[in-house]
Length: 575
Image 1 (cartoon, one colour):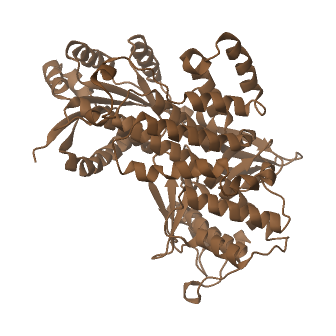
Image 2 (image 1 turned 60 degrees about the horizontal axis):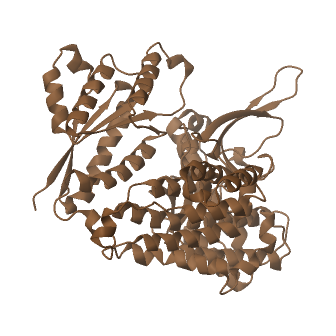
Protein backbone atom coordinates (compact mmCIF):
# COMPACT_ATOMS: atom_id res chain seq x y z
CA UNK A 1 0.00 0.00 0.00
CA UNK A 2 1.39 3.38 -1.02
CA UNK A 3 1.57 6.00 1.69
CA UNK A 4 0.28 9.54 1.43
CA UNK A 5 2.87 11.83 3.06
CA UNK A 6 1.58 14.80 5.04
CA UNK A 7 4.37 17.31 5.65
CA UNK A 8 4.29 19.31 8.89
CA UNK A 9 6.61 22.28 9.38
CA UNK A 10 7.25 22.53 13.15
CA UNK A 11 8.44 25.94 14.30
CA UNK A 12 9.34 27.20 17.74
CA UNK A 13 11.96 29.20 19.58
CA UNK A 14 14.74 27.43 21.49
CA UNK A 15 12.96 27.93 24.84
CA UNK A 16 10.36 25.34 23.78
CA UNK A 17 12.83 22.65 22.74
CA UNK A 18 11.42 20.18 25.30
CA UNK A 19 7.89 20.65 23.97
CA UNK A 20 9.15 20.33 20.41
CA UNK A 21 10.95 17.08 21.18
CA UNK A 22 7.89 15.64 22.93
CA UNK A 23 5.74 16.65 19.97
CA UNK A 24 8.03 14.79 17.59
CA UNK A 25 7.63 11.65 19.70
CA UNK A 26 3.86 12.15 19.59
CA UNK A 27 3.93 12.38 15.78
CA UNK A 28 5.95 9.19 15.64
CA UNK A 29 3.27 7.40 17.68
CA UNK A 30 0.56 8.87 15.48
CA UNK A 31 2.34 7.36 12.48
CA UNK A 32 1.97 3.94 14.06
CA UNK A 33 -1.78 4.52 14.11
CA UNK A 34 -2.13 6.22 10.73
CA UNK A 35 0.11 3.81 8.83
CA UNK A 36 -2.83 1.38 8.53
CA UNK A 37 -4.82 4.17 6.84
CA UNK A 38 -2.08 4.82 4.29
CA UNK A 39 -0.81 8.04 5.88
CA UNK A 40 2.65 9.12 6.96
CA UNK A 41 3.33 12.36 8.86
CA UNK A 42 6.71 13.93 8.07
CA UNK A 43 8.15 16.61 10.37
CA UNK A 44 10.26 19.40 8.87
CA UNK A 45 12.11 21.52 11.41
CA UNK A 46 14.94 23.98 11.97
CA UNK A 47 16.38 24.05 15.46
CA UNK A 48 15.90 27.74 16.01
CA UNK A 49 12.82 28.12 13.84
CA UNK A 50 13.29 30.68 11.09
CA UNK A 51 15.95 32.91 12.60
CA UNK A 52 18.82 31.01 10.96
CA UNK A 53 17.19 31.27 7.54
CA UNK A 54 16.33 34.93 7.93
CA UNK A 55 19.84 35.84 8.99
CA UNK A 56 21.18 34.63 5.66
CA UNK A 57 18.09 35.83 3.77
CA UNK A 58 17.49 32.41 2.23
CA UNK A 59 13.91 33.40 1.48
CA UNK A 60 13.65 31.16 -1.55
CA UNK A 61 14.42 28.05 0.51
CA UNK A 62 11.89 29.11 3.08
CA UNK A 63 9.19 29.70 0.45
CA UNK A 64 9.93 26.34 -1.11
CA UNK A 65 9.69 24.56 2.27
CA UNK A 66 6.39 26.23 3.04
CA UNK A 67 4.90 25.42 -0.37
CA UNK A 68 5.82 21.77 0.06
CA UNK A 69 4.16 21.52 3.48
CA UNK A 70 0.55 20.72 4.22
CA UNK A 71 0.66 22.09 7.77
CA UNK A 72 2.72 24.81 9.48
CA UNK A 73 2.71 24.55 13.27
CA UNK A 74 4.16 27.43 15.32
CA UNK A 75 4.78 27.27 19.07
CA UNK A 76 5.37 30.39 21.17
CA UNK A 77 5.94 31.12 24.84
CA UNK A 78 7.66 34.35 25.93
CA UNK A 79 9.09 35.73 22.69
CA UNK A 80 8.98 35.75 18.90
CA UNK A 81 12.30 35.29 17.07
CA UNK A 82 14.13 38.10 15.31
CA UNK A 83 12.46 37.76 11.92
CA UNK A 84 9.63 35.36 12.78
CA UNK A 85 6.83 37.88 12.29
CA UNK A 86 8.16 38.70 8.79
CA UNK A 87 8.41 35.01 7.91
CA UNK A 88 4.90 34.39 9.17
CA UNK A 89 3.68 37.05 6.74
CA UNK A 90 5.28 35.09 3.92
CA UNK A 91 3.66 31.83 4.99
CA UNK A 92 0.33 33.55 5.43
CA UNK A 93 0.57 35.12 1.97
CA UNK A 94 1.29 31.71 0.42
CA UNK A 95 -1.77 30.35 2.17
CA UNK A 96 -3.95 33.16 0.83
CA UNK A 97 -2.60 32.64 -2.71
CA UNK A 98 -2.76 28.85 -2.84
CA UNK A 99 -5.02 27.70 0.01
CA UNK A 100 -2.20 25.82 1.66
CA UNK A 101 -0.47 25.15 3.99
CA UNK A 102 -2.77 25.10 7.00
CA UNK A 103 -1.20 27.37 9.64
CA UNK A 104 -1.68 26.93 13.39
CA UNK A 105 -0.15 29.11 16.07
CA UNK A 106 -0.07 27.75 19.62
CA UNK A 107 0.75 30.02 22.55
CA UNK A 108 1.86 28.31 25.75
CA UNK A 109 0.08 29.39 28.94
CA UNK A 110 2.22 28.19 31.84
CA UNK A 111 3.68 29.56 35.10
CA UNK A 112 6.46 32.03 34.40
CA UNK A 113 9.19 33.31 36.70
CA UNK A 114 9.20 37.10 36.65
CA UNK A 115 13.00 37.05 36.37
CA UNK A 116 12.77 35.34 32.98
CA UNK A 117 10.69 38.15 31.44
CA UNK A 118 12.80 40.35 29.17
CA UNK A 119 12.15 43.04 26.61
CA UNK A 120 11.61 40.25 24.08
CA UNK A 121 8.22 39.70 25.69
CA UNK A 122 7.04 42.81 23.83
CA UNK A 123 7.69 41.00 20.56
CA UNK A 124 5.21 38.33 21.63
CA UNK A 125 2.51 40.88 22.45
CA UNK A 126 3.03 42.65 19.14
CA UNK A 127 2.90 39.41 17.20
CA UNK A 128 -0.30 38.28 18.91
CA UNK A 129 -1.92 41.61 18.09
CA UNK A 130 -0.77 41.34 14.49
CA UNK A 131 -2.22 37.89 13.81
CA UNK A 132 -5.42 38.87 15.58
CA UNK A 133 -5.84 41.77 13.14
CA UNK A 134 -5.27 39.31 10.28
CA UNK A 135 -8.15 37.21 11.58
CA UNK A 136 -5.78 34.30 12.12
CA UNK A 137 -6.96 31.78 14.72
CA UNK A 138 -4.61 31.22 17.63
CA UNK A 139 -4.81 28.51 20.28
CA UNK A 140 -3.60 28.39 23.87
CA UNK A 141 -2.07 25.23 25.30
CA UNK A 142 -1.30 24.64 28.97
CA UNK A 143 1.03 21.63 28.74
CA UNK A 144 2.53 19.31 26.16
CA UNK A 145 -0.25 16.80 26.86
CA UNK A 146 -2.83 19.50 26.20
CA UNK A 147 -1.05 20.46 22.96
CA UNK A 148 -1.00 16.87 21.74
CA UNK A 149 -4.68 16.40 22.58
CA UNK A 150 -5.74 19.56 20.72
CA UNK A 151 -3.61 18.88 17.66
CA UNK A 152 -4.76 15.25 17.42
CA UNK A 153 -8.39 16.34 17.28
CA UNK A 154 -7.63 18.95 14.63
CA UNK A 155 -5.53 16.48 12.66
CA UNK A 156 -8.35 13.92 12.59
CA UNK A 157 -10.69 16.59 11.26
CA UNK A 158 -8.51 17.77 8.37
CA UNK A 159 -6.86 14.54 7.16
CA UNK A 160 -9.78 13.70 4.81
CA UNK A 161 -9.50 17.18 3.27
CA UNK A 162 -5.75 17.20 2.60
CA UNK A 163 -5.39 14.02 0.65
CA UNK A 164 -6.41 10.86 2.53
CA UNK A 165 -6.11 8.03 -0.03
CA UNK A 166 -9.23 6.26 -1.12
CA UNK A 167 -12.76 7.05 -0.05
CA UNK A 168 -13.26 10.24 1.93
CA UNK A 169 -14.43 9.84 5.48
CA UNK A 170 -17.15 12.37 4.78
CA UNK A 171 -18.76 9.92 2.32
CA UNK A 172 -19.74 7.68 5.23
CA UNK A 173 -21.92 10.33 6.90
CA UNK A 174 -25.57 9.25 7.01
CA UNK A 175 -26.06 7.51 3.68
CA UNK A 176 -29.81 7.95 3.98
CA UNK A 177 -29.50 11.68 3.14
CA UNK A 178 -30.48 12.66 -0.43
CA UNK A 179 -28.19 14.67 -2.69
CA UNK A 180 -30.56 17.61 -2.46
CA UNK A 181 -30.42 17.57 1.31
CA UNK A 182 -26.63 17.41 1.28
CA UNK A 183 -26.46 20.49 -0.92
CA UNK A 184 -28.75 22.54 1.26
CA UNK A 185 -27.30 24.42 4.22
CA UNK A 186 -28.31 22.68 7.43
CA UNK A 187 -28.64 24.31 10.81
CA UNK A 188 -26.28 22.98 13.44
CA UNK A 189 -28.59 21.92 16.27
CA UNK A 190 -25.97 20.21 18.44
CA UNK A 191 -26.22 21.07 22.16
CA UNK A 192 -29.48 23.02 21.81
CA UNK A 193 -31.54 20.64 23.96
CA UNK A 194 -28.68 20.29 26.45
CA UNK A 195 -28.20 24.05 26.73
CA UNK A 196 -31.83 25.03 27.21
CA UNK A 197 -32.79 22.29 29.64
CA UNK A 198 -29.64 22.61 31.76
CA UNK A 199 -30.07 26.38 32.04
CA UNK A 200 -33.64 25.83 33.20
CA UNK A 201 -32.50 23.09 35.61
CA UNK A 202 -29.71 25.04 37.32
CA UNK A 203 -31.56 28.35 37.61
CA UNK A 204 -32.66 27.42 41.15
CA UNK A 205 -28.99 27.17 42.17
CA UNK A 206 -27.48 29.84 39.90
CA UNK A 207 -28.63 33.47 40.06
CA UNK A 208 -26.57 34.06 36.94
CA UNK A 209 -28.53 31.42 35.01
CA UNK A 210 -31.86 32.73 36.35
CA UNK A 211 -31.07 36.28 35.25
CA UNK A 212 -29.96 35.09 31.82
CA UNK A 213 -33.19 33.14 31.26
CA UNK A 214 -35.26 36.13 32.30
CA UNK A 215 -33.59 38.32 29.69
CA UNK A 216 -33.17 35.78 26.87
CA UNK A 217 -36.74 34.44 27.10
CA UNK A 218 -38.08 37.97 26.84
CA UNK A 219 -36.15 38.56 23.61
CA UNK A 220 -36.51 35.18 21.86
CA UNK A 221 -38.70 32.18 22.64
CA UNK A 222 -36.24 29.87 20.85
CA UNK A 223 -33.10 31.55 22.20
CA UNK A 224 -31.16 28.27 22.30
CA UNK A 225 -31.17 28.20 18.47
CA UNK A 226 -29.41 31.57 18.18
CA UNK A 227 -25.69 31.81 18.93
CA UNK A 228 -26.16 35.34 20.26
CA UNK A 229 -27.92 33.77 23.25
CA UNK A 230 -26.74 30.16 23.25
CA UNK A 231 -22.99 30.94 23.37
CA UNK A 232 -23.14 32.86 26.69
CA UNK A 233 -25.57 30.25 28.04
CA UNK A 234 -23.02 27.52 27.34
CA UNK A 235 -20.37 29.52 29.17
CA UNK A 236 -22.67 29.84 32.19
CA UNK A 237 -23.25 26.09 32.21
CA UNK A 238 -19.55 25.26 31.94
CA UNK A 239 -18.70 27.83 34.61
CA UNK A 240 -21.45 26.60 36.96
CA UNK A 241 -20.85 22.86 37.06
CA UNK A 242 -18.28 21.53 39.48
CA UNK A 243 -14.60 21.43 38.49
CA UNK A 244 -13.69 18.84 35.91
CA UNK A 245 -17.31 18.39 34.86
CA UNK A 246 -17.49 21.99 33.64
CA UNK A 247 -14.38 21.44 31.53
CA UNK A 248 -15.88 18.28 30.07
CA UNK A 249 -19.08 20.13 29.16
CA UNK A 250 -17.14 22.93 27.47
CA UNK A 251 -15.31 20.30 25.41
CA UNK A 252 -18.62 18.72 24.37
CA UNK A 253 -20.04 22.10 23.37
CA UNK A 254 -16.92 22.92 21.34
CA UNK A 255 -17.30 19.66 19.42
CA UNK A 256 -20.92 20.56 18.68
CA UNK A 257 -19.76 23.73 16.90
CA UNK A 258 -17.39 21.90 14.54
CA UNK A 259 -18.14 21.41 10.86
CA UNK A 260 -20.05 18.23 10.11
CA UNK A 261 -17.85 15.14 9.69
CA UNK A 262 -17.75 11.52 10.74
CA UNK A 263 -15.05 12.45 13.25
CA UNK A 264 -17.30 15.09 14.81
CA UNK A 265 -20.14 12.59 15.25
CA UNK A 266 -17.79 10.04 16.79
CA UNK A 267 -16.24 12.57 19.19
CA UNK A 268 -19.63 13.90 20.20
CA UNK A 269 -20.94 10.43 21.05
CA UNK A 270 -17.80 9.52 22.98
CA UNK A 271 -17.81 12.75 24.96
CA UNK A 272 -21.49 12.43 25.88
CA UNK A 273 -20.62 9.08 27.38
CA UNK A 274 -17.43 10.34 29.01
CA UNK A 275 -19.23 13.28 30.63
CA UNK A 276 -21.73 10.93 32.26
CA UNK A 277 -18.98 8.54 33.26
CA UNK A 278 -16.86 11.23 34.95
CA UNK A 279 -19.79 12.60 36.92
CA UNK A 280 -20.68 9.11 38.19
CA UNK A 281 -17.05 8.50 39.13
CA UNK A 282 -16.95 11.79 41.03
CA UNK A 283 -20.01 10.76 43.06
CA UNK A 284 -18.59 7.29 43.80
CA UNK A 285 -15.16 8.67 44.75
CA UNK A 286 -16.84 11.15 47.10
CA UNK A 287 -18.80 8.43 48.91
CA UNK A 288 -15.82 6.06 49.12
CA UNK A 289 -13.59 8.85 50.46
CA UNK A 290 -16.13 9.69 53.16
CA UNK A 291 -16.52 6.04 54.13
CA UNK A 292 -12.77 5.91 54.64
CA UNK A 293 -12.90 9.03 56.84
CA UNK A 294 -15.78 7.61 58.87
CA UNK A 295 -13.82 4.45 59.69
CA UNK A 296 -11.76 6.43 62.22
CA UNK A 297 -14.66 7.14 64.58
CA UNK A 298 -17.80 5.32 63.36
CA UNK A 299 -18.42 1.60 63.69
CA UNK A 300 -20.36 0.97 60.49
CA UNK A 301 -20.77 -2.47 58.95
CA UNK A 302 -21.08 -3.76 55.40
CA UNK A 303 -23.15 -6.71 54.29
CA UNK A 304 -21.28 -9.53 52.54
CA UNK A 305 -22.65 -8.34 49.19
CA UNK A 306 -21.64 -4.74 49.87
CA UNK A 307 -18.16 -5.88 50.90
CA UNK A 308 -17.69 -7.79 47.65
CA UNK A 309 -18.78 -4.84 45.52
CA UNK A 310 -16.45 -2.45 47.37
CA UNK A 311 -13.56 -4.89 47.15
CA UNK A 312 -14.17 -5.29 43.42
CA UNK A 313 -13.89 -1.52 43.04
CA UNK A 314 -10.41 -1.60 44.57
CA UNK A 315 -9.18 -4.70 42.75
CA UNK A 316 -10.91 -4.79 39.36
CA UNK A 317 -8.46 -4.93 36.45
CA UNK A 318 -10.88 -3.10 34.14
CA UNK A 319 -12.29 0.40 34.47
CA UNK A 320 -15.97 0.41 35.38
CA UNK A 321 -18.35 1.41 32.60
CA UNK A 322 -21.48 3.50 33.12
CA UNK A 323 -23.63 0.55 34.18
CA UNK A 324 -20.94 -0.62 36.59
CA UNK A 325 -20.68 2.86 38.11
CA UNK A 326 -24.45 3.18 38.61
CA UNK A 327 -24.41 -0.21 40.37
CA UNK A 328 -21.51 0.90 42.60
CA UNK A 329 -23.26 4.21 43.34
CA UNK A 330 -26.42 2.37 44.38
CA UNK A 331 -24.42 0.13 46.73
CA UNK A 332 -22.54 3.03 48.30
CA UNK A 333 -25.73 5.02 48.91
CA UNK A 334 -27.30 1.95 50.54
CA UNK A 335 -24.29 1.67 52.89
CA UNK A 336 -24.80 5.26 54.03
CA UNK A 337 -28.53 4.75 54.52
CA UNK A 338 -28.18 1.37 56.29
CA UNK A 339 -25.64 2.77 58.76
CA UNK A 340 -27.30 6.20 59.15
CA UNK A 341 -24.20 8.02 57.95
CA UNK A 342 -24.27 11.64 56.80
CA UNK A 343 -23.70 12.03 53.08
CA UNK A 344 -20.69 14.13 52.02
CA UNK A 345 -22.95 15.58 49.30
CA UNK A 346 -26.12 16.35 51.23
CA UNK A 347 -28.35 16.23 48.14
CA UNK A 348 -27.70 12.46 47.86
CA UNK A 349 -30.01 11.93 50.85
CA UNK A 350 -32.95 11.87 48.44
CA UNK A 351 -31.22 10.37 45.43
CA UNK A 352 -31.80 6.63 45.95
CA UNK A 353 -35.16 6.71 44.12
CA UNK A 354 -33.28 7.64 40.94
CA UNK A 355 -31.40 4.35 41.14
CA UNK A 356 -34.49 2.16 41.10
CA UNK A 357 -35.22 0.00 38.05
CA UNK A 358 -36.97 1.85 35.21
CA UNK A 359 -36.17 5.30 36.66
CA UNK A 360 -35.52 8.04 34.09
CA UNK A 361 -31.99 8.43 35.44
CA UNK A 362 -31.08 4.76 34.97
CA UNK A 363 -32.73 4.64 31.55
CA UNK A 364 -30.63 7.61 30.47
CA UNK A 365 -27.47 5.98 31.82
CA UNK A 366 -28.26 2.75 29.97
CA UNK A 367 -28.83 4.73 26.78
CA UNK A 368 -25.39 6.29 27.09
CA UNK A 369 -23.87 2.90 27.86
CA UNK A 370 -25.10 1.71 24.46
CA UNK A 371 -22.66 4.12 22.82
CA UNK A 372 -20.02 1.41 23.36
CA UNK A 373 -21.83 -0.60 20.70
CA UNK A 374 -22.31 2.37 18.40
CA UNK A 375 -18.64 3.35 18.54
CA UNK A 376 -17.62 0.11 16.92
CA UNK A 377 -20.20 0.20 14.16
CA UNK A 378 -20.17 3.31 11.97
CA UNK A 379 -21.70 5.06 10.11
CA UNK A 380 -22.84 7.42 12.84
CA UNK A 381 -25.78 9.75 12.32
CA UNK A 382 -26.96 13.03 13.79
CA UNK A 383 -29.88 11.07 15.19
CA UNK A 384 -27.44 9.00 17.29
CA UNK A 385 -25.95 12.23 18.63
CA UNK A 386 -29.37 13.70 19.40
CA UNK A 387 -30.28 10.59 21.41
CA UNK A 388 -26.99 10.73 23.32
CA UNK A 389 -27.42 14.45 24.01
CA UNK A 390 -30.92 13.85 25.38
CA UNK A 391 -29.72 11.00 27.62
CA UNK A 392 -26.89 13.15 28.97
CA UNK A 393 -29.29 16.02 29.58
CA UNK A 394 -31.51 13.79 31.72
CA UNK A 395 -28.50 12.59 33.75
CA UNK A 396 -27.30 16.14 34.39
CA UNK A 397 -30.78 17.41 35.25
CA UNK A 398 -30.94 14.88 38.07
CA UNK A 399 -27.49 16.02 39.27
CA UNK A 400 -28.05 19.76 38.91
CA UNK A 401 -27.15 20.24 42.59
CA UNK A 402 -23.48 19.78 41.67
CA UNK A 403 -23.38 23.41 40.55
CA UNK A 404 -23.19 24.18 44.29
CA UNK A 405 -19.79 22.48 44.57
CA UNK A 406 -16.24 23.34 43.57
CA UNK A 407 -12.90 21.52 43.33
CA UNK A 408 -9.30 22.51 44.02
CA UNK A 409 -5.94 20.77 43.81
CA UNK A 410 -3.62 21.58 46.71
CA UNK A 411 -0.10 21.64 45.28
CA UNK A 412 1.95 22.71 48.30
CA UNK A 413 1.63 24.30 51.73
CA UNK A 414 4.25 26.45 53.42
CA UNK A 415 4.35 27.43 57.10
CA UNK A 416 5.16 31.04 57.99
CA UNK A 417 5.51 32.53 61.47
CA UNK A 418 7.08 35.91 61.97
CA UNK A 419 8.17 36.99 65.42
CA UNK A 420 5.27 37.98 67.69
CA UNK A 421 2.67 37.28 65.01
CA UNK A 422 0.15 34.54 64.39
CA UNK A 423 1.41 31.68 62.20
CA UNK A 424 0.04 31.39 58.67
CA UNK A 425 -0.10 28.65 56.10
CA UNK A 426 0.61 29.65 52.50
CA UNK A 427 -1.40 27.56 50.06
CA UNK A 428 -0.33 27.10 46.47
CA UNK A 429 -3.35 25.57 44.79
CA UNK A 430 -5.21 25.21 41.51
CA UNK A 431 -8.91 25.97 41.21
CA UNK A 432 -10.23 23.21 38.96
CA UNK A 433 -12.81 24.19 36.39
CA UNK A 434 -13.62 27.26 34.34
CA UNK A 435 -13.04 30.58 36.06
CA UNK A 436 -14.33 32.75 33.22
CA UNK A 437 -14.54 32.69 29.42
CA UNK A 438 -10.84 31.99 28.92
CA UNK A 439 -9.38 30.80 32.21
CA UNK A 440 -9.24 27.10 33.04
CA UNK A 441 -7.63 25.56 36.12
CA UNK A 442 -6.25 28.81 37.52
CA UNK A 443 -3.19 28.82 39.80
CA UNK A 444 -3.71 30.73 43.05
CA UNK A 445 -2.06 31.46 46.38
CA UNK A 446 -3.81 32.08 49.68
CA UNK A 447 -2.97 32.63 53.35
CA UNK A 448 -4.88 30.78 56.06
CA UNK A 449 -4.50 30.11 59.77
CA UNK A 450 -5.43 26.40 59.60
CA UNK A 451 -3.68 23.56 57.76
CA UNK A 452 -5.26 21.10 55.32
CA UNK A 453 -4.00 18.07 53.41
CA UNK A 454 -1.17 18.45 50.92
CA UNK A 455 -1.21 16.80 47.47
CA UNK A 456 -4.98 16.65 47.77
CA UNK A 457 -7.86 17.14 45.36
CA UNK A 458 -10.69 18.65 47.38
CA UNK A 459 -14.44 18.80 46.80
CA UNK A 460 -16.22 21.49 48.76
CA UNK A 461 -19.32 23.62 49.11
CA UNK A 462 -18.70 27.14 50.33
CA UNK A 463 -15.16 27.35 51.71
CA UNK A 464 -12.48 24.96 50.46
CA UNK A 465 -11.20 24.60 54.03
CA UNK A 466 -14.38 22.63 54.85
CA UNK A 467 -13.83 19.94 52.30
CA UNK A 468 -13.83 16.31 51.27
CA UNK A 469 -10.41 14.96 50.26
CA UNK A 470 -10.72 12.78 47.13
CA UNK A 471 -7.06 11.70 47.14
CA UNK A 472 -5.95 9.04 46.11
CA UNK A 473 -8.99 8.33 43.92
CA UNK A 474 -8.45 11.63 42.11
CA UNK A 475 -4.86 12.85 41.85
CA UNK A 476 -2.99 15.78 40.35
CA UNK A 477 0.07 14.19 38.74
CA UNK A 478 1.73 17.54 38.15
CA UNK A 479 1.42 18.47 41.83
CA UNK A 480 3.05 15.18 42.82
CA UNK A 481 5.83 15.71 40.29
CA UNK A 482 6.46 19.38 41.25
CA UNK A 483 5.36 20.58 37.81
CA UNK A 484 3.27 23.60 36.86
CA UNK A 485 -0.36 23.41 35.81
CA UNK A 486 -2.80 20.68 36.75
CA UNK A 487 -2.93 17.13 35.38
CA UNK A 488 -6.04 15.67 36.97
CA UNK A 489 -6.39 11.90 36.77
CA UNK A 490 -9.24 9.64 37.88
CA UNK A 491 -8.59 6.16 39.28
CA UNK A 492 -9.49 3.53 36.68
CA UNK A 493 -8.26 0.03 37.53
CA UNK A 494 -5.90 -2.17 39.52
CA UNK A 495 -3.18 -4.13 37.72
CA UNK A 496 -3.13 -7.42 39.57
CA UNK A 497 0.08 -8.49 37.82
CA UNK A 498 2.35 -5.99 39.53
CA UNK A 499 -0.19 -4.44 41.98
CA UNK A 500 0.16 -1.05 40.29
CA UNK A 501 -2.68 1.44 39.82
CA UNK A 502 -4.00 2.81 36.54
CA UNK A 503 -5.36 6.35 36.34
CA UNK A 504 -6.93 8.17 33.38
CA UNK A 505 -5.78 11.67 32.48
CA UNK A 506 -9.01 13.57 31.83
CA UNK A 507 -7.61 15.77 29.06
CA UNK A 508 -6.99 12.98 26.54
CA UNK A 509 -8.00 9.78 28.42
CA UNK A 510 -4.44 8.44 28.33
CA UNK A 511 -3.44 6.00 31.07
CA UNK A 512 -1.07 7.00 33.88
CA UNK A 513 0.36 4.01 35.74
CA UNK A 514 1.41 4.37 39.39
CA UNK A 515 3.85 1.74 40.62
CA UNK A 516 5.11 1.32 44.17
CA UNK A 517 8.85 2.00 43.96
CA UNK A 518 9.40 1.04 47.60
CA UNK A 519 11.47 4.17 48.12
CA UNK A 520 10.68 4.37 51.83
CA UNK A 521 12.29 1.37 53.55
CA UNK A 522 13.23 0.56 57.15
CA UNK A 523 16.52 2.21 58.04
CA UNK A 524 16.38 4.77 55.25
CA UNK A 525 18.16 8.07 55.77
CA UNK A 526 15.35 10.59 55.38
CA UNK A 527 17.76 13.50 55.08
CA UNK A 528 19.23 11.81 52.04
CA UNK A 529 15.76 11.08 50.65
CA UNK A 530 14.56 14.66 51.02
CA UNK A 531 17.70 16.01 49.34
CA UNK A 532 17.35 13.72 46.32
CA UNK A 533 14.62 15.22 44.03
CA UNK A 534 13.93 11.93 42.24
CA UNK A 535 13.62 9.89 45.44
CA UNK A 536 11.45 12.57 47.02
CA UNK A 537 9.18 12.49 43.96
CA UNK A 538 9.07 8.67 44.08
CA UNK A 539 8.04 8.85 47.72
CA UNK A 540 5.12 11.14 46.85
CA UNK A 541 3.88 8.77 44.18
CA UNK A 542 4.35 5.83 46.56
CA UNK A 543 1.97 7.62 48.93
CA UNK A 544 -0.74 7.27 46.26
CA UNK A 545 -0.19 3.54 46.21
CA UNK A 546 0.03 3.15 50.00
CA UNK A 547 -3.01 5.28 50.80
CA UNK A 548 -5.08 3.45 48.19
CA UNK A 549 -4.31 0.16 49.95
CA UNK A 550 -5.06 1.71 53.34
CA UNK A 551 -8.45 2.87 52.07
CA UNK A 552 -9.29 -0.63 50.82
CA UNK A 553 -8.42 -2.24 54.14
CA UNK A 554 -10.31 0.39 56.14
CA UNK A 555 -13.53 0.20 54.10
CA UNK A 556 -13.73 -3.52 53.38
CA UNK A 557 -12.13 -4.67 56.66
CA UNK A 558 -10.17 -7.21 54.64
CA UNK A 559 -6.40 -7.56 54.72
CA UNK A 560 -4.32 -8.25 51.63
CA UNK A 561 -3.17 -11.79 50.92
CA UNK A 562 -0.28 -12.79 53.15
CA UNK A 563 2.15 -12.97 50.26
CA UNK A 564 1.34 -9.40 49.24
CA UNK A 565 2.00 -7.78 52.62
CA UNK A 566 5.31 -5.93 52.92
CA UNK A 567 7.00 -5.14 56.20
CA UNK A 568 4.77 -3.01 58.35
CA UNK A 569 6.71 0.20 58.24
CA UNK A 570 5.60 3.78 58.46
CA UNK A 571 8.11 6.63 58.48
CA UNK A 572 8.00 8.76 61.59
CA UNK A 573 7.19 11.95 59.70
CA UNK A 574 3.99 10.34 58.33
CA UNK A 575 2.68 9.29 61.76
